[in-house]
Structure formats: structure tokens, C-alpha cells
Length: 84
Image (cartoon, rainbow, N blue to C red):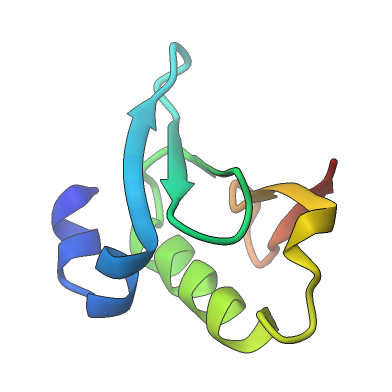
């Protein structure tokens, strides 16, 4: 996971910490935006990281980050935002 993130300059700048939960799923703590990102398992990690990058780059001006506590990338073809 860390190697994939380090391949991308934007993601490297965005992501502060990576946790592995007791369910063996990843949780990402970004430096900006929401409090945490539910990444899920490592399956399709590249696609999930691409969705995250696209979301941050294209949604940042449309979203009031103060309204949301988390982003969920677990589901295929979806980015789900969880309100506070």
C-alpha cells in the first residue's frame, strides 16, 4: 500500500498515516479534507487510489469538507462521503 502511494506525488502529499484495522482493512488519515478514509481491503488498490485522487482534485471546490467526517472507497465504482 505504502509503495503504491509513494509512486504518486499527489497521494504522497495527501496521505499522512495508514492504519490496518482488526478486520485487516486499511484506513487512511489524510493531511487535509476529511478525518479519515475507509479504504477497505487491498483488492483493487490502484483503482481505489485513482478514485481518491480524482475525487480530491475534482471535488475540492464543490464540497464543504467541514460537513463530512469520512470518505469510503470500499465499494466498486463508488466514493461515499459520510456526514458528521
